[in-house]
Each structure stands twice: as structure tokens, then as C-alpha cells.
Image 1 (cartoon, rainbow, N blue to C red):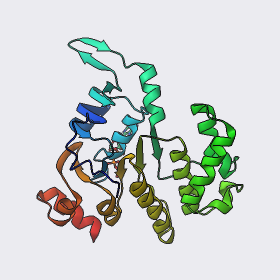
Image 2 (image 1 turned 90 degrees about the vertical axis):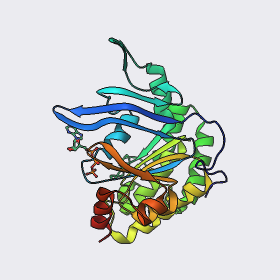
Image 3 (image 1 turned 60 degrees about the vertical axis):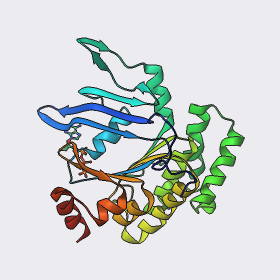
Length: 267
Ligand SMILES: Nc1ncnc2c1ncn2[C@@H]1O[C@H](COP(=O)(O)OP(=O)(O)OP(=O)(O)O)[C@@H](O)[C@H]1O
């Protein structure tokens, strides 16, 4: 695990992420209901809870793929979303939104690699075009990342020639190539055959152990969540029903809804 544990840090760090009374509705459906939580820099937080409890929506709001209905999301001390001051709508600063988006990497259930590009191009195009780094530097970084995800020999392959697990490891390398401060992982192993899951989780364990990237994870891999996260948030109907360190949530849950959920997924 990384050198400093955000849970025990005595520093006066501002939270990196703050959800402040965030409401998200889709039509008449309230998906997030006055949600408050913070994430410290370097912290790894796992979101668990039944299907439909709003976990993916939280990640999509952070990526600005969705906008809040009300409330404010703060990232790095600045509002990410539009907000009301009294009756006045204060629009989010688009420059800040773009800056934040560049700091956030996301890996989805579906790997979403560009099929017409090689592995190398998938990893290097983003840094070259969005971060403005040289092709040589991007190439060097791609090689290092491919070594980390154990795919050095696939650098010139196309995604269609890789297994699902290999494609997901490339997707992780691609996200890391953008040097994100925050990594969002949404059920990244759910679409994989069981025998390919371990390789992907091992890569993510290495990322957790060797970097101080802040991570928000949605996963059904409870042992993995237990190993890598500092804190677990249990959601139901768009609210946090219980939160705590993984040893407590998985080993000694207090809330009936947490017990029932864990019982269902661990059986
Ligand atoms: N774009 C959308 N339009 C309408 N409803 C949506 C939209 N996106 C999500 N929802 C609904 O919002 C609710 C919360 O979805 P969300 O994907 O955040 O839940 P989740 O906790 O991640 O669930 P799962 O574990 O199944 O992925 C669900 O009822 C979903 O159908």
C-alpha cells in the first residue's frame, strides 16, 4: 500500500472530492438523494450497494457525463457543476471542468478501446493530443505502462487480437497514461470470463500499491475491495446507509441493509 495512508494522515488536506447535498433525478426517479461525502487526496474508496442505488451515476457526474439536478460537486476546491446561490444560477466554469476532466481517468466495464488503432496508439494518442507531450515521451510511457500490465509483447497488436482481460489491462494503461489524479473504476471485471479477472485485479493492486492516485471503485469483487480500499460506502436508494473501513463493513456491518446486501453478493 502507498507510503501515506489518508485515513491516518494528520494533515489538513482539503478533500479532493466533495459531494454537497447532491441530488440527481432522471424524470421522476430520484437516483441520488441529498448526498454528502468527501474523498481525501490519495484515498481509495469503494462504493457498494444494490443495483440501481446510484453508484455509476456518481462516477458519471464526476466525469461530467451527467449534470447534477441540485447540490454541488467540488473537485480540488472548485465547483464542478452548476449551482444555485439563493435563486441565482452560477454556471460551472468550463475551463475548470475541462481541467478536472483531464485529471480524471475512468475505466468502464466495457473496455472501449479504439478498434482501428494499435495498443500503442490507444495509449499514446490521448497524451499527445490532450496533454501536448511529444510522441517519443508518450511512446516511452506506453512501454513502461505495458510492462506494468504485462503486455509489452502486444504493443503493435490491434484490440481484436487480445482477450477481454488483456483489453481491459490496455484500458487501464491508457487511463494511467493521462497521469490522472483520480481514477474511477466501474465494475471493470464484470464483463470478463472468470479466468481473466485475476490478471486485471492484480494490475489494479499494483496501481494501488505504487501510486498515490485517488480511486473510486464500484466493484462486486469484495475481496479485492477489502484489499485495496481505505473506506467503503454502502449505498441504497441514492443515500449512504453505512460507511467505514473495509474490515468493519465486510467483517462487522452494523446496518441491516448492509448485512442483507453482503449476504446476497457473498453467497
Ligand atoms: N440516463 C438515464 N436515464 C434514466 N434513468 C437512468 C439513467 N442513468 C441511470 N438511470 C437510472 O438510475 C438508477 C441508478 O443507476 P446507476 O447506474 O447509478 O446504479 P448502480 O448503483 O450503478 O447500479 P448497477 O450496480 O446496476 O450498475 C437506475 O434505476 C437507472 O436505471
